Length: 352
Image 1 (spheres, rainbow, N blue to C red):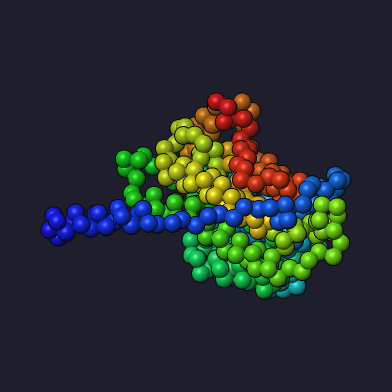
Image 2 (image 1 turned 120 degrees about the vertical axis):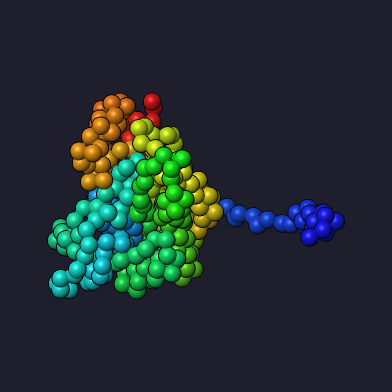
């Protein structure tokens, strides 16, 4: 291309910029807002409906699944690469072949796989016979696979009311030595995977809004007391898993890709919260600190664990159950006015 042609092309591009327009967000109104908190203690933290958990066989995901079921969740779909065959209905006793854990990477070195999907689902079904529980092999980086997983969930349970994204991968490498492939993999699973799952579930929630009939019995605020739906339809809750690594550079491990991916999750949460509030969909994130799971076990990490504990006012690592309570709040009526928030659960480590 000649210099005159290049100059003309650049001028045309600059001119086009002055002619462009951008789409505008539509914000929520008081007719599409979620309901206020319930007035009594029992119902304030009650969880209802159907939830999808990605990274569903990891230690943190297992604790969250159990907590949600304890608080009343009626349908649960666990998505994880470790599930080699889908775990079918509660009445199906046929053994399933499953892999080990490792699909549920948590924040700040959190997740770590537990036992197999079949054992986890069997234990949850035994302890919570009121609930329908399934598991499905799903790659969160595959848009078509995630869409199929959401469709399967709707086919089995009839709806999707909540999503908790826990699938993630970690990677420690000096930035000078890190292969670009490793960077891309971590960003793809942690950041892009969170977006793919959130988008697929939000699309289903919007469809449910369009199909919902007006509530029959309203309170003085125009809310359906029994179902807890906002006036525009069902709405929904989405919780993304970020990390303390989104907020600071952790020591001693070099993990630029992981830190950047979790910072992206925090930014994504805010964007989705702004765009989807008008649909009654609340989007928040949780930033766990160092959690005592299989991912952080072993003699090779002994020195790192000692460093993590010494830099925390609480003097210890967290437990998976200590992440679960925050998620319960966000998915219950107690979290009805929490939107676009990132909640750090790290024992106070962020104060240093």
